[in-house]
Amino acid sequence: MRDLYLLAAGLLTGLVIPTSALPHLPNANLGNSGTIWNLKDDLKPNVGGKIFSTAEISLPEFSDSWLPKPVESGLSPKTQLVSRRIISGKQLYYERLAALKAGQIYPSLPEDSIKSSLISTKNTQLTYEDWKNLLAMEAKAMAQSQGDNRLGILVGDSLSLWFPREKLPVGKLWLNQGISGETSNGILKRLSVFAQTKPDVIYIMAGINDLRKGTTDEIILGNHRQIVRKLRQTHPKTIIFIQSILPTRLSAIPNTRIRHLNDQLALIARQEGADYLNLYDSFTDFEGNLRQELTTDGLHLSTEGYEVWRSLVHQVEHTL
Image (cartoon, rainbow, N blue to C red):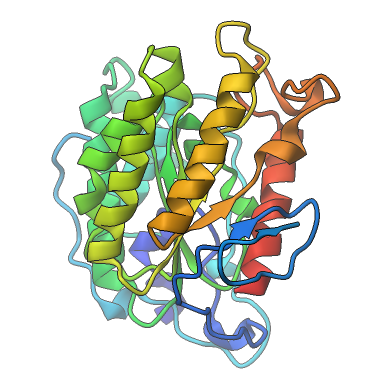
């Protein structure tokens, strides 16, 4: 029966796997190297900045007792991710909310429970505040339940929000703090919601919505600098990755401007003791635009696009 008491915070994208079933993973180097990662060229890191290729709800009380217990061999089916096709942000929101209320790993809930949750709220118009509240509750559950488990956090906009949880590296818990339409300023204002978690790595992706809204480069870069500084204060031993802004196929957002911003983001990462992950080069075609097969609309990513991102994150994770 104990396998039924799954980690409630595990609903936050990714597999929760008994530690005894995992291969040995070396401890992450938690130093602030300022390394710039360009995974198209080389996967071996170098130090010194060199370039290498919700509405309020009543929640169960979370504690270490929610952690899955180790098994002697193999994976317990109770701890494996249940694949479910999600077709809208509203569906994603309410499935995550239903899982959180049930104190079970998302989305391994009975169909009836999910349908009931969706039916009772189908006419509700979700807001930015709803998503902020949900992510805050998920972060609180994670902080209470993480224990000694390793943790990765994705922070960003819709690109991060829709990162397929089954594509995230196994061997650790994952907390997805992405919100559709999010800006660098919005991220800066909500960093405190996961301040009590203990991540070994945080991936930041921000900037594209700033550009769509006419925000100046100076403000975008200033927000990134402040984001890293705040995270340094609350998570001094955590590896922080600023991820490059991805190219687009939108004429209103010149990719030349994105490349300039990315050059500055790499510099900020080096100056502030963070790392920089160059995703941009892997997503561009020969004209410097977002590769057509990697996007659904010139901005958001297709399945193939997330596969490219997944590959780069996995390569980084293997070096930590």
